[in-house]
Amino acid sequence: MTHTAAKEKVIGIPRAMSFYNNYPFYFGFFNDLGIKIVLSDVTTKQTMSEGAGLVVTETCLPIKVYVGHVLNLIGKGVENILVPSLQSIDYKIYNCSKIRGLPDLIRNVVKQPFNMIEATLDKSEKGKGLYEFLAECVAPFGITDKSIIKKASKAGWRCYNNFHVMTKSGIPYSKALSYALQGKVVISESTREYPISIALVGHAYNLYDERVCMKLIDKLDKMDVKVCTALQLSAEQLNDGIATLGNEKYWANEDEMTGCAGHYLKDNKVDGLISITAFGCGPDSLMIERITRKAKQFGKPLLNLTIDEQTGEAGFITRIEAFVDMLFRKKRANIVNKIDIKEKQNTYNLKTDFIEVN
Ligand code: SF4
Image (cartoon, rainbow, N blue to C red):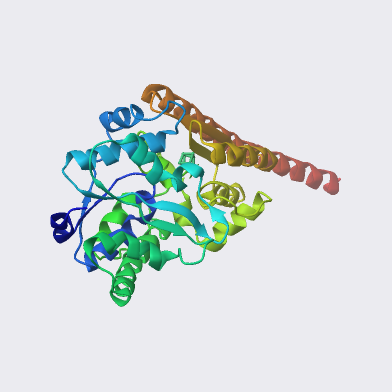
């Protein structure tokens, strides 16, 4: 890292992977310290293909996208780029090996010169907790005072908590993010009535990157479908969801998969589930197997979709439309069935009355 770069206090954050979970925190934290954040541009076809071009084909799509975002930041002339190694986010709760080894992967595939800030968070190891992680993030800018870092972390938590208060109240992801970054908290319950509800199960980086999931949430909304996600649930609800699937939390992003699925499988207001997973994702394939088994037990329709950079939008949307259509038909059939049963009961009562009179 050059002396000039340290003076500029500019940090590049790739708009990929943990960005979708942690950006409100980073925003509050780095701003409090006077460090300007430069984000990579939104994902495009080019981001995907450039990233995919540098890694082996079997690598999952989110990692290919991440590589593309690092290249985008380098292209913008950003010298200091945060590439965290998020090992474990709680005691013995681990991320997958690709997330843990992200700095190593980037170092091996991206050959352009830049300064990688490879902070490590490992809550299973002593001395690798959040404050140490944050200290590593800002050390290249000459910030070492622990009390300043602690104070800035409070600003980070404020922004992060505001974001989550809003998503839990039902504010969509992008709106909640935009309000949180403006320092606002807007809680407004939507009064719109939806005929059916679907739970979307997947990692934030797969659901909220509009290019990766092909604006699925907007599309479902236009189909008159209420979308439920892990972001609307509390930690207790997610833990309960994981327990519903009969296992203990092991993977760091299990909340977004088994926690979310387990909760909504039990929710009678939710008509079906759609899971979005990346092709070649080991942890997800294990979790999807358990979710599929449980969905059968609960008799709840589930559509499992796998994505990679070759996924065509037309085929993807056709499958979703067919699933939504099936849910609408099922709901209609249930309503008709209930009316039929009621009518039969009425007919029976009339007959009984007649017999009693005789
Ligand atoms: S959890 Fe799966 S999708 Fe996410 S980085 Fe790891 S392998 Fe890729």
